[in-house]
Amino acid sequence: MKNSKWLIKSSVASFVIAIGLFVYVVNESKALSYLSSDSKNCINCHVMNTQFATWKHSPHAQRASCVECHLPTEGFFETYLAKGRDGWNHSVAFTFNTYAHAIQISENGAERVQANCISCHSSVVQNMLDNAARYEDLAAGIQPVDRKCWDCHQDVAHGKNRSLITTPNALSVRREVN
Image 1 (cartoon, one colour):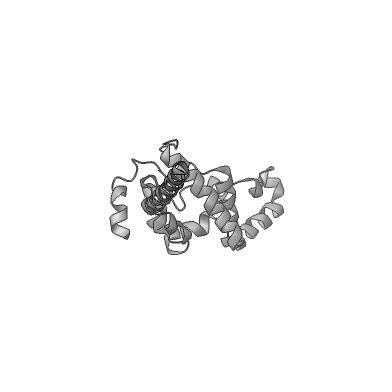
Image 2 (image 1 turned 90 degrees about the horizontal axis):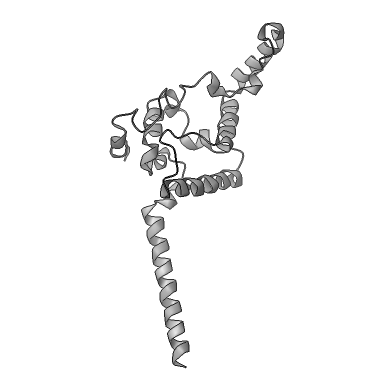
């Protein structure tokens, strides 16, 4: 009988400790903030300060949030599925320090950004496609459909240089926006 009481008490204590650790991790990681679409949440991790600082000083900052460019816009389920997948990948990379100092977008992320560029700039893209079809002989087989928008517009949204050392005051970004 004593063993069963001890087992129950230790189980309850373990459960309470696990819940406490979970609440602590959620609070420290600001996990609930990622449910919103506020671009300031992208700098909860210090490694995103450069990307935020360069975006903040770009024309896109007045027109599109990080979420509007980097996440699917088709629907609620797709958006939060992508947020969950990206959040998991980011938390693993940041926890175990497995990310490159000059962060590169994933293939899946690049596909989402490309789709969102085309969606926002559909009239420009349509003009490009019409012109490509009209001047096919001059284009010599180059199809705009096969290219990413940033192949030509590489400085859009995040500037030319993106690494931890290219925006010298990036660490103060948090204090400026909060």
